[in-house]
Structure formats: structure tokens, C-alpha cells
Length: 373
Image (cartoon, rainbow, N blue to C red; front, side, top):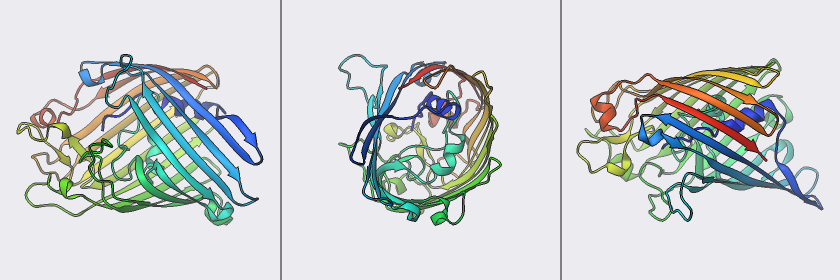
């Protein structure tokens, strides 16, 4: 799935300020708040897919209703509209629902919700999804429980029922999402039934560790992309993460492995004999990021990412699917406005595999400005 640059501008502002949702309604224990961001962004690259305007508006609503002192009902809805199209455009992906879920919070017993939410693998992946102009290269939406996912039931418990401060756990179940032309779900974004778990522990000194696991069924259409009859009915994935966040310093590292899960290639061109696509039998993923927030608003950043297949069909054995270093900086003017500039140095070289799998090997410069309302 093609990733959105500049969306992590929002994360940059959130970490550097107390900006949050604005309450627009409150009565009899019911509250409704609105949040949103307008991003003006632009790519500069020889890669035509990643070159040009990448501006968008992202907004949403969150609501709470207080049933009693320990039971709270809640809901979240988030939407995004791309701004690069012409008026009355029907351009694909110009208008999309990011999140939409509702649930109940039971005090120290935790919360449960259902809808479109973040998969539990992102509980770890979010720690490196903070680069000003890029980020989240491994956490792919609608890729089982890697990023934003549909048809999920999520249970979360913070501080382990109130007994262990800093220890958070989550359990998640995802129902089957078949290939469906009307919803836009393809072989790449479909999934069978599955489950996931995550746990994280945060210390008072700013150090945190986390682990997450996902196991899901695959669809027959996904299994059919495997060759040499070396297929499995299931996908598996795990993520490990560590971060330090204290006194302006932010350092995070994640490592994960996926089995029959990480997509590659052009899925819209599966009938072309010169192209390859599918899911890597095994992939090893690494993300590293370091940032420092200066008191006057400057936030320099450096990050590294790679995703390497270690056992893949379609002549892709040992190939890097992604590998890059990103240098960047953001400047936070106040809780509502920030700007960024980033340079992504692509460490991949042009090869027969990169051409067949439509993997970019070009460098990218990203400029952006964001206004949070």
C-alpha cells in the first residue's frame, strides 16, 4: 500500500504541545469533540508516483457519554480528503474513512470496542511512526493487523486492572474481510479471521518496551499467489520495540518478522508476466529513529528503515523491499502550526527484481506545513 507522507506532522505537533480536540458539545454527561489538521505537502522525486502535490485535510469527531462513575461509552470517527485532485473528482483514494469505532470503558476493567481501528501490531509500530515527513513504512494499513484495520474487536487494559502502573495489554480479534469490488478491498488488503495481542511497560524514567503478535487466516486468492507449493494457510507476525522519551530526547527502535504477510509488487498488474507481486514468505523489518525537541521549536530527526525478504518466491530471495535513511527537521511555531523538510536517501539499487516488483529506488524530498484546529 502506498504510504502517506506528511501525516506524521500531526504527531510532531502533538508531542511538542498540548494541542487536542476542541469540545463542541457538552450536556448531561455527554461530550462531543472535533479534531483536525490541514496539511500542505509536496514531494520532489524522479519517481512519478511520489512526485508532486500531497496535500490533504484530516478531521474527525470523538464522543463520550458517562453512564455512571465507572462506565463510559465512547466513539471515534476520522476522515481524510486529498486536495490534489480537480473539483468533482472521482479519483481513487481521494476520500477515505481512516477510523470509525465505538465501545464501552469499564474503569479499571478496561475497554472494549468494535469497528475500524488500529491493529495491535501498531502498538509497537507507532513508536517509529513519528518522522516529520515520512514514517510508518512497515505498519501498512489493511494488511491484517499491521496498521488501520476493519472488522476488529479490541479489548484494552491500562495499568493491568490498576495493579501495575505502566503495564498495558491489548487483545484483538479480526473478522474475515473478503475481496469486494464495491468496498475497494483487493487481494492485497483482504484477510481471513485472526487475532492479535500486545503488551507494553513504561518506566518513570522515560524508557518503555513493547511486544505484539498477530496470527490470521489467509484467503485462497492470497495463497494462490505463492509458487512452488510452499504455502501456508496462515500469516504470522511479531513486533518488538523499545523507546526513550524524556526531556526533549526521543529515541525508538523496532524489530519485527512477518510470515506470508508483507506485500510486494503491483497487485493491479498480476496478469503481466513481466511483473511480480505477492506476499513475502518471510520478511525482517527494522526501524530506528532519533529526534530532539529544542525549546524554541526546532525538532531535528534522523531515521533508518529496512524490510528484507529472507525466503521469498518469485526469484526474490534475500531482496530488500525497503531500505532508506531519512534526514529531516520540523519547526513548531505553536500548538497549531508547524513546518517540515525531509530528505529520504534511498539505499536500494535498480535491479531486475525492483523493476518487476515496481519498487522505487529514487530519493525523495518532502516539504510540508500543517495547521491543527
